[in-house]
Length: 220
Ligand code: ADP
Ligand code: MG
Image 1 (cartoon, rainbow, N blue to C red):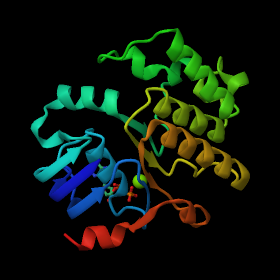
Image 2: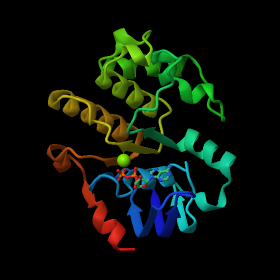
Image 3: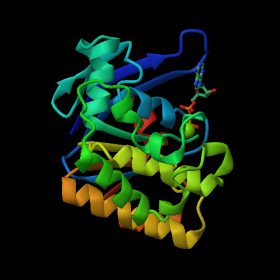
Image 4: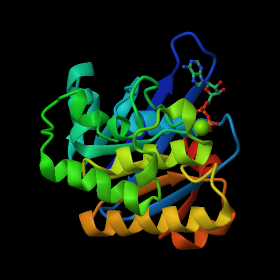
């Protein structure tokens, strides 16, 4: 699902540079990523999602060579293949929770919004315990509720790859387990791969494999 070789990336105006010599993730694998803040975990997820492009190296995700695609191609790739749960949720503040969940369909890119998708959005919201919050806008939702909206939005397109950036960070321990159960159950059903950055060491035994980001970087 993921094959990265000798990828390098630096922010245009920043001093930060990331190098990863090798990262391989198998289809349907559930991988946890741990590591200190500010070391480039989010930067790596952005590269895997096609939000940014490596300056060097090769990066193939779901059989697509991301280094060969331009901005529009990567946007289409992301819409159709990747569910991204952002660290800061990245909800759209003028849309209510339901509209936020369906946001990937609003931006078009070959995704078709039909009654089946709407049903799926409701089922996900129900499973995440936010069915009664769908008319609320992000500013009226708690952090945990916003996080669950973000999770529903990442799953509603039935992506091949789910990238989660500290997706359970704002939740209480019990809800964390419930949300991870849900994430893993949906991923298993879709045979989707999960790569999740987490600081929740309690959750690590539930992954097939845990990568220490410090080691991944040092290998460069
Ligand atoms: P982590 O997710 O591990 O906390 P990040 O990938 O968010 O780390 O950030 C790694 C480094 O890159 C940090 O030093 C951060 O300040 C810097 N950084 C993040 N985003 C940008 C940006 N858009 N422009 C310049 N520097 C950035
Ligand atoms: Mg981060």
